[in-house]
Every structure is written in C-alpha cells, then in structure tokens.
Amino acid sequence: MKTFGFCVAAILIALFQVGFVSALPYPWNALNVLLCGVIFLGIVFDYRSGILFAFTAGFAWDIYHGSFFGGYAVALLVTLIVLHAVFENVFTNRSLFTLMALGAAGTLLFNILFALIHFSVFSEIAGVGFFVFFGYQFFLNLLCLIAAFFIVHVTSKKFQSIFLSR
Image (cartoon, rainbow, N blue to C red):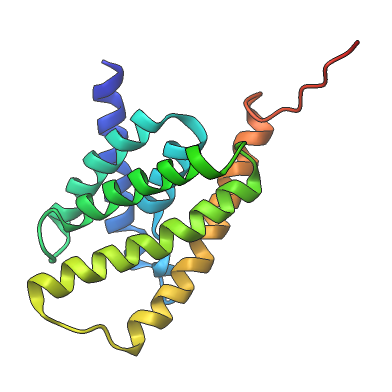
C-alpha cells in the first residue's frame, strides 16, 4: 500500500509540473520540480524511493509531453543512478552543500542526457534559447532544493546535530 501511495504522489507531482509549473511565466517555468524531487528523495531520504519516484513520475511526465516516450524517465533514472554513485563514493554526509553540489550536477547531467536523447530521435540541435533556459533551470532548481532542505531540517529530526557527551 505504501508503494501505491508513493506512485500516486509521484503522478500528482508530475501533473503539478505539467499543469502548473509549465504555465508559469518565463523564467519561472524553467523550474523542474520532478528533477528536484528525484534528487532530494534519492539523496536525502532513500535511494529506492528515488528510483521509484523517478520511474513513476518520469513516465507520467512522458505521457503529457510531446517528446520521445520514455526519454524523461530514462534521463531521470540515469541521473539518479549517477548521483547516487557519486554520493556514496565522494561525499560523507547529507548536508546542504552536498545537496547543492549534487543538485547542480544532477541538473547539468539531466539536461545533457535529455538533449542527447532528444537529438538522437529528432535530429534537432538546441539553440541559444536552450542554454538560457538551462541557466534559469539551474538557478531555480538549486533554490527549490535549498528550500526543501530547510523545510525538512525545521520539521524533522533527520538533520539535527548530535553531540556526544563524555
């Protein structure tokens, strides 16, 4: 039942991305809530939850997007797998700076992967507008991850400092 509820939540967030965020005025529509959710869940909480979220939300996003079916899901999954490997082998804790570094790397990797998938299917080269949009997305995704980190930090004991006494 927990998995079903999690999948429903991922689909609802994908609908929020498609229905609300994409309708925002430029440059606010560059925010990628799904990518932020995948990075946040996969790094801060649980890798398995991140994989399930990436798979479910990616395919839900693919249904509503006019691009290559499966492109978003594959790009989200590969991004999370690479970020998890980097997190496990390079970083030592789940701090704000770790989340920001992985969020920046994840946004860059996701856009490169999706551009490659899109180019291999449609043979279109991205113009200057893609890079401007990417710059806004990079900045807005980092702001979203920072806000999510502080919300979880204030409302949860997951990130509280623990001091050992003698």
